[in-house]
Image (cartoon, rainbow, N blue to C red; front, side, top):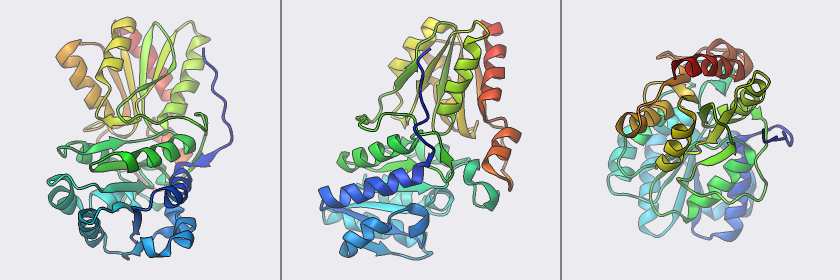
Length: 317
């Protein structure tokens, strides 16, 4: 079992903010737009250093998407910032028509995603955004797992030509991936090799999957853990290689099981290698108010739930 160490908890949105500060110094075409949530997006240092490259749009998210699309025509690389709920559900028409349809080079950066938004409750939590965005033709969908990976992903998408949806969160979570990592869009990461079951996870559930794998090892079950940070384009080769070896799979995500990572994996397996699969995800429901830990426990989105799903799926082989 490969041991990953929590280097100190940090929020993924701060990884985004740190990357924006760095991009402000290295890429003069990067501009930032925000819908009245500078503090939540951690981009004040970028603004302080590049005031002429920041646009405060206010609580007018649809306008923000249209402005971002227009800025690309002049060669700018706009990064839009607001909560994931307002980055997708509120402005889906503008993203579809003004950004995705014409392949505009806009980076839609969405904080406070999933149920771990916490106490703000169901109206601000979104568990449908991955499905909404991955269905848009040409849209890249990225959901990094910790601070370091979010920072690396933000820097990487500035070099990618085309629309990107980058999803990250509010709470402080384990920071365990390398500081100097190279982020490759569309490339899955093998975190732990195993032979009995494949656990494919994204976002906050990656660390929970590693904990589950360690607990399962004590029970004599060898779990392979794969970090799918890029949900679209999906690294199908990595998925198939692992599942053909282990014979069963558990997918884990902080998202509705309808439309999320699990369905993307199920599509690949149904087409190329039918395999027993269990889904760790919310079950067609809205969230509610509570602490992130309370909500992850109630909606079965933690290492205990992953472990239970593994014990179930290995019996189906």
